[in-house]
Length: 314
Image 1 (cartoon, rainbow, N blue to C red):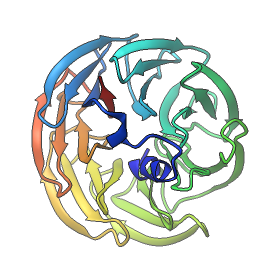
Image 2: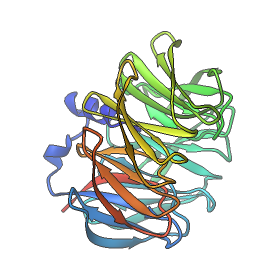
Image 3: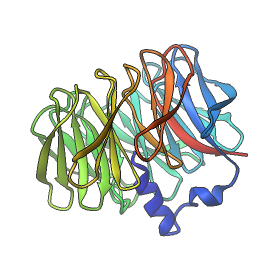
Image 4: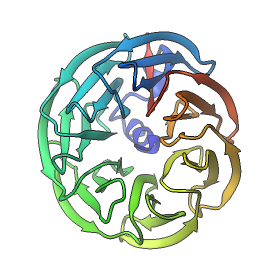
């Protein structure tokens, strides 16, 4: 999920902005092979604790101040309380839960399930699944628009289609349409109200769309696929885990302004409290970059780290 959507919700008074949450900014990093999530204080990366979870934690995403951890191979979610850094609940009933986007109300998580071909809506405060919608394929990466009303969902690791889902009422999601990107897609991310980025799972390219019309606006050269994208301070940050690079690009034109080396296997990337986080599947490191794309901190969190997110601890 791109954090611009979260901040847009905060501006509308739908969720508490981070500055008002109070406490200590923390990065939560999955330790995939150690069955845990590791908490680091930001920005200095002082290790706070290891939070024991079920086996094989993969994706992790902030919803309100709850971290939703997907265990794809086990078909379950772990809900981690961000304030106390403890597991609050384990939710079952999924086939292969993958990635999460957060609603603007800070309560509902839109969780892709590639096994069932659905997006599930989870109430993280009540700790239960409240709705599901069939999207017609193995749903994976997902992003919510800045108005909080539409999801774009890539239907596969190398997706032939992207699904558009209406979530104006989070408990009544509705499939609007599906479309074919110019190649097999991987990640999706809303950058502004009139730009959504789609990365490739098969080509060294990115695509920029106008979500209002569905029009493909621009195709751009990029690093080795699959690429991932997040947004911070008027810029897009694009990783290529196979190249071991983090690029900073113009948020609207996609023009690259810097390119930094990061550990190989650094695929997923997240904006977190004014910083950029990218963990490495290959080396288990967590790299932290500033808004200019400069890597300012790095720590080895585990043997293999799939994903990271931001919470505020007490």
